Length: 382
Image 1 (tube, helix red, strand yellow):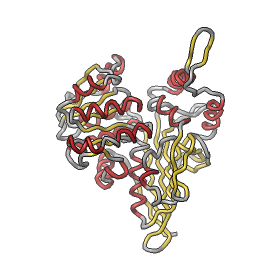
Image 2 (cartoon, rainbow, N blue to C red; image 1 turned 90 degrees about the horizontal axis):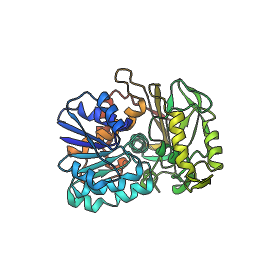
Image 3 (cartoon, rainbow, N blue to C red; image 1 turned 45 degrees about the vertical axis):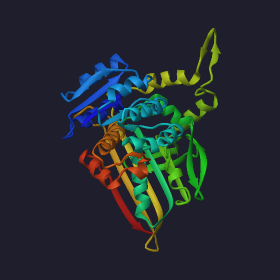
Image 4 (cartoon, rainbow, N blue to C red; image 1 turned 120 degrees about the horizontal axis):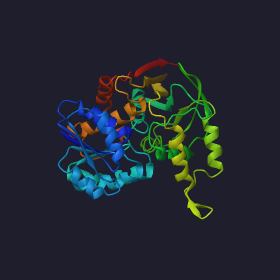
């Protein structure tokens, strides 16, 4: 099997690392428009299976030509490139996986289902941490019960040694992060879809080993999952976890317009506040070498065998000292690599799939266990 990954940032190189160490994989082509990203990836990736190419993700036809003849194309670039890349993969009859980041984009990718089946290829967007791994786990929790009344998905990436005043560490795309903070997402209430804003309805949350944290709605965190379980689950939401006080600062910045996309005039220059914020987020929060952790807490309450019951899935992953890899790289890129291979070996059939319905959870759980992820499941009668 031969794979291609576009985007040689943190997630792309982690995805290449995971694919290259799998039996049956003969080559992984890692492509990026940035010479700096390619150079740092070459230092990070030692496997002879990994090859490198320079290509711009904004030119999907060129990406498609490079991907032709390969098993799966994996997009590890920002969400606004994904639809074009999915179409390019489809045109060249290559399976496609991405990390998501925008539900409207994902819905357009899923609309390619008929064409994908005809071409004999699979498309699975949203294959990162959340949406992605958390959706697969959340769907498994729902299936554990005969009727799921309330499903709460909580996850987040945090620095092991937080620095005031924001107590945060950037471990993935700043563009995706800002979209998660200020965009709109979907939840379920009374079994019906409702729109929620990022960083809204902030709640206190106890996290073992970390103490009291906070959680607020993640815009797009559920992605398609709310639509999938509409009318089947009474209440469903997804909130991301941060250290206390972080979201108040983000919400204040948002209220003042720091994340607006419309340009404003500063002297003789037109500036997009969001574009500037992205640059400043990268400058302030990007601290290579600092250690992070990722926490997942998923709780489903409902009925099993006619009795009230609860099932809880917990996972914590920490910075990998041996491979100098962040927990966010592992929990975001490894799921994408797993699903890319599932498409390649036929465990996921042709067509466009949501990960909560298209990815076989049992197989996925076996795969993450082989990568050292310790996911625990606790079932309790209420």
